[in-house]
Amino acid sequence: MKHNFSRVILLMLVLFLTINANSLMQKAHEKAGVNLQFCRIGPEIGDAKSYTAFSIPLMAQVQNNRYMKFSARLNQGYQSYDGEGVYGFSDLDLGGSYLYNDITILGGIRLPIGTKEIKSDKFTTVSAGRLPYINSSLVYASSGFGFHAGASYGTEMSSDLSLAFGALYYFRGEYVPLKGMDDYNPADEFRLAAGADYSQGDFGFFGKTVLSFYSQEKLDGKKLSEPGMGLNFIGNFVYTSWSLETVFSKRGESELKWGGDFEPPSLFSFKLSYADVWDYAEILEEYSVMPYVGFEKTGEGSMTKGAGQLLLGCYLKNFFYKGFPGTPYFELRLGSISGDASLFGFKVGTDINFQIYK
Figure 1 (tube, one colour):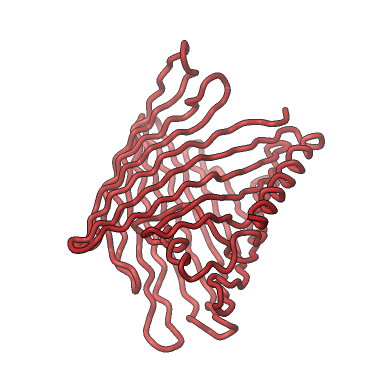
Figure 2 (tube, rainbow, N blue to C red):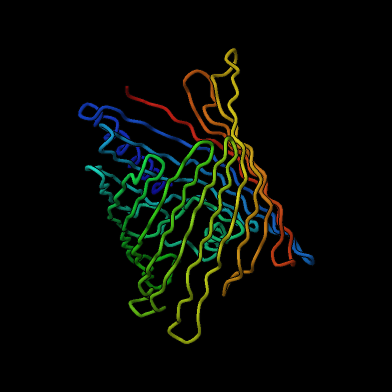
C-alpha cells in the first residue's frame, strides 16, 4: 500500500508541474479513462477460465503551439485471471515532440515506478492480458527503464497525396519480471516507417508500414535469443461515411540459445465502420456515432494457440454534456481458440478530456 501511495503522489507531482508549466506554455490538457475488460475462455472439457481487468489510465499534455508538445502517461488498475487477482501500476512514460519545417523530432523516457518483482502466484494474472486473443492494450506492471528517440519527415506530393517517412529507436533496460528470477533484458528495437495519405472526392486512403529490427534478448547477462525482424501494416480505406481498417502484424522467428526457434503469433484484423453525426442539442451537444463490425485472427505461435473472433462495437465522440467531452465505447467479442475452446468477451469504457487550468 505504501508503494502504491508513493506512485499516486509522484503522478500528482507530474500533473502539477505539467499544469503549472501553463504559465509559460499556453494550454494544458488532462485525460482520464475508465475501462473494463472481460474475457471468458470455455474449453470443451473442464472448467472455464475468465480474465477481468479494471483500469484508470491518466494522461497530461502541454502544448505551447502546433510545434511543441509534452506528455505524461500512467496506468493503474486491477486484474484477475483464473481466480487470482492483483492490483498494479505501470511505469511512468514522459514524452515530447518538436516540429521544425517538415521534420518532427520526438523522444521519451520510461521511468520504472511500476509494480516490480511479481510473486509467482500472481505472474500468470499479470501476463494474461498479453495473450493475443485477450489483447489488453494496457500494462499493469513495470517493464524496466527505457527511452526512445526518432524523427519523421512529411511532404505533400500534390493536393491529394502526402507521404511521410520516419525512424525510431527504442532502448529497453533490464528488469526482474518475477520475484526470484534473474535479470531479464528485453530486445531493443529500431523501426523504419513509411506512410501515405491520399484523398480525392469521397474516397480516401491512409496506410503505414513499419519494419522493425530487434536485438538479442538476455537473461542474467547471457544470450537468450538471436536478433530478429518484424513487420506491421495499417491501412484505412474511406468512402463517404464508410471506413475499412486493416491491420497486419508479424514478428519473425527468433533462434533460441539452446536450439530451435521461437515463433511469436501473427495478427490480422479488419473493421468496417460507419460514422454519422447526431444532434440532440436539447440534451447533449452534437456528437458522432461510429458502429463497426470486424474480425480478428491471431496465428499460432510457439507458446500460444491461434484464435478467431468476431467483433461488434461502437464509439461515441463528444458525448458528454456541455463541454465535458469523452469517447465512450463498447466492443463485444465472440470466437474460439483453435476449435478447442470458446471465447466470449467485451470491453467497455470511456476517455474523459478536461482542463484543470485554463
